[in-house]
Structures are given as C-alpha cells and as structure tokens.
Amino acid sequence: MKKNYKGNISPKEIVNEIKLSKNIILTAHINPDGDALGSLLAFYFMIDDFCKKNNMKKMIKIVVDDKLPKYMRHFEDTELIWSYEKFGEKFKHNFQNDEKFDLFISLDCANKERYGKAIEIKKLSKKSINIDHHISNTEHADFNYVEDICSTGELLYQFLEIFEIELREKIAKYMYLGIINDTGNFRHDNVTEHTFFVCSKLIGAGVNNHKIANIIFEVSEKKVGFIGELYKNKKINEYYKFISYYLTQEKMKKLSIEKDDTDGAAEMLLKIEGMELSLFVREDVDGSLKGSFRANDKYNVNKIASIFGGGGHIKAAGFKTNLSFEEILEKTYQELEK
Ligand SMILES: [Mn+2]
Image (cartoon, helix red, strand yellow):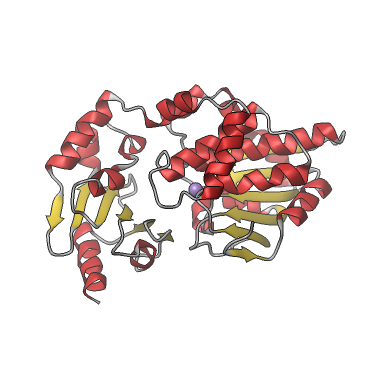
C-alpha cells in the first residue's frame, strides 16, 4: 500500500543498508514528540530483534539533541536515548579520529534544521537515510523515504514484514505512541483505514491503549494554569475565523511552565467553535519565535508556514523565525488576503 510516496530508496533497500552497517545512529527532530520518540524506540527494537534473529552484532544508538517531554519518564526504554552532549563525551574517540559511523537514520524529521546538533553526527556518517511522513520533507539525506501517512509510527509497520520479525508488545507500544500522538488520539483527519488496520494489530499485540493515552494526554496542574491563560488572552479575528496567542518567556516564568507544558496549544485554540485557523507562538530562550499553525477545512497551513521557512502538513504546520509576533501576524494576513 504505497500512496504519495517520494524518495530514492524503498523500505526493502533500507533494511539492506541496515544489514550492511556495523554501527547505526538513529535520531529524530528537536522538540521531540510522541511520534519522534515512539518511532525511534520502535525502530530501535525492530533492528535489535532483526540482529538477534540473524546472529548479527551491531552498535545501535539513539541520539536526540533536546530535552524529552516529561511523560517519557513512564517508558522504561527512555534510558536508551542519548543526549547529543552525553553521546559526544562517550564516543569522543569516534568524533576526534573522524572514525565514521556507517549509517545515520533520521525519523520524523522534515528538514535538516530539525536535527539540531545531531547534524554533526550525520556529517561523520558514511551514509544517511531519512524516513518521514511530512509532505514538506526536503529529502535531506543520501537516501529518502517519505510517505504521506498519519505518523512515522504507522509508516514503520511495513518494516516488520521486511525484517521478518514478530510484532511484540514493546514494539507495538511505541508505534502506538507515535500514532496517537500525531492523530490527537484519532481525532485528526490524517486517520485512514490503514491507520485502524495497523492499530488493530498493535492492540492485538497487547498494547494498552487506555494506559498510553493517559500517559501522553495527562495534564499537569501547571499546564491547567497555562490553558486558562491561553483561553483568556487569545486574539480572535472574526473575519478569517483566525485565533492566535503569543507566549513570552516572561509569561512562561510567571506561570512556571516549560515548553512541553505548551504542547497542543494550537489545537486547543482551534477547538473554539467556528474557528478555521489557529496560531500559537512561543518565544524561545534564544529570543527567536516558534509558531504552530492548525487549520480546519478552509486553509492550507503547510503553505502559510512556508512563508516563515517552515512547513509540515496541510492542517498542522510549524516554523521558527526571528520576526516579531506582530510581523508574523501581518505576513499571515497578507497570505490570507490572497
Ligand atoms: Mn510525526
């Protein structure tokens, strides 16, 4: 089942590259979400099972150049994920002697900017593969496999057959995490018959859907404070049915929240009756602004986010910019007027 596939490598050929590689680095995007992390862990255990089954010895390491969301503490395998700094310390000899890694695989990364500092490891790797589901994917690796599908978690399902491994509960759990993260627990319009087909297999393998949904959709008290602030001080443009909110670092300190407490803010704004477009902008520690657009049926936010050098999907897209919030609004209105 291949719809809207782009790239220059097939899943079968990816498995072959994995087979030929002695050491493999896996990474996902900065500001990692349930799909990035779920995909990393699911793919890690797929490769690991494949190696065990075929008596192969490989070094497989997961490196993510960012803090992980707090809910990841509920998953015991999170300890397999190295920060860029720790990985650098431990494998310094590899870095210094330019002793290259065989294969660098990015999952859920639309562009190379999303690697963060992990891009340095890519530069030291002999080959790179990009596996992703964002239509805005820039095909940033030597080999690219991009499928327009709800999540990287769902995309990885086909690899089980190629690796010729069993779908065990651990792998299923992490794929499921990716799927419910990117579909908003099956609420978004990226859910297809294939999504439910895959999920039926995942549940069949023992995934506890209730438990995982509770873990990633649980709300801390601090976050409740932020949600109150978000709904209270949102801006609505009635003409375009456009709702927006800007969160400064100062406000974050006042509410004592961290960036992952703001996850889902753009979706929350769009939930208000009648809204067609939402924008949540957060000031980063370096002073740059990070924006997330969400849309119902009227607008293509992949296109709007591209004005700011970002992208994603038609109904969900993001960007990072050095423009001010006012400038972002101005440019957005210019685009809406077109
Ligand atoms: Mn994703």
